[in-house]
Each structure stands twice: as structure tokens, then as C-alpha cells.
Image (tube, rainbow, N blue to C red; front, side, top):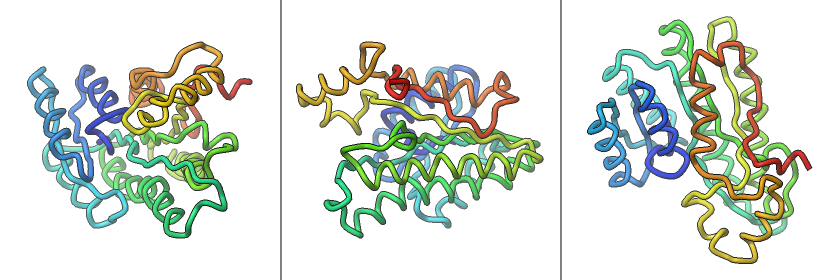
Length: 242
């Protein structure tokens, strides 16, 4: 089950898991046309994919989509909490309403999804929860207050989940991408000055691609990472190593 699965990172993660034989439900709130397109493409390529509409801030909606996923595929043992929004306001520029919006989607959404998935993963004999955080959840940012705070919350929530449910063979890990070319960052990277600034802060010498993150998610979803839980997988081209 992948939230924000209709485009960007979520879409590439869905495609990567689909190629490896996973049955997938992709969830999105507004991008139904794009979600249906991804659903059709994966199914046409011999995979199994179901699109479901989901508001990640609604506990009732989460219960419904988890139930629909289990009804269709028989179980749920992988959850990718990918849905999120990016904002660049400083502390003083951030209104209370904006703070709550970012925290609700980026933080509360991960909590509610995890809470809804755990009972089904327990029934399945275990599972892997993959939370998409950010390098902004590891280090401070001159450009953002609410976004980095929400991603830092995801980082620690992931570790709490890993410790609390290891006995149920449920693993939880976070992925921390650097700057990646996606619809969410398109407006920023379209600015030549911003593009060069971001590129200059990436030692490997290029902007990240969604596939870079998808391969990391594939590893954490697989049995090859069966001894990995509570960890942070940083995929940032070396940015936070400086």
C-alpha cells in the first residue's frame, strides 16, 4: 500500500514494487485520473494494482482503504507512507493554519496509516513500514520551519514504531531523500538560480531522480532487509555528509 502513489516518488515506488511481483494499492486524495492511469499501466504489464482515494488525515478513510486492500489482495504486509506537502516559509512567515496543515498531512497522516496497518500486518505474520521523511528531518533548513519539523517527527515516530512492534515482526524504517526531481519540487528547480544552488550542495553532482528513492524503498520492503528496522536510509547524493 503506497500513499501519494499517483505521481512522483509514489508512482516510481509503485512501479518498482510491481515489477518485483507485489500486489499494490495506490492511494491519493485528488489525483484520481493520474492514479487510474498508474493502476491501468501496472495491470497491463501483468501486475496487480488497485487505486483508492484517501485523505491521509482521516482515520475513518484509512480504515476503509486498509480494509479494501485486504479484501482485494488477502493481506497487507508493506506500507509506504509517502504522501506529503512541501512548504518553504520561515518561522515568522508560518501561520498557525499552515503549521497545522503541514503537520496533519506529513505527520498525522503517517501516524494514522501506521496505526491502521499494524493489526493487518500482525495477522499476516509481519510486515515492513517505510516512511518517506527528508534530509530536512535530519538537519535544519534556512528555508522551512513546518516542513522540516514534520519530517523530523516522522523520523522519531518511525523509531518508536520499530521498537514497539519488533516482537510482531513488523519493521519500520525511514527514507530521507535530498533534492529529487518530482512534481512537488518542479517549481523550485525551474528557477535557474535555485537549481544551481541545490546542485552545488549535492556532492555527487546531479539532482536526484525518483528512481533513486524507489530502489531504496524496494530494498526496505524486501526480505533482504529483514534485519533492518528503526533505521534511516539517506538518499541525498552526499548532501548531509558535508
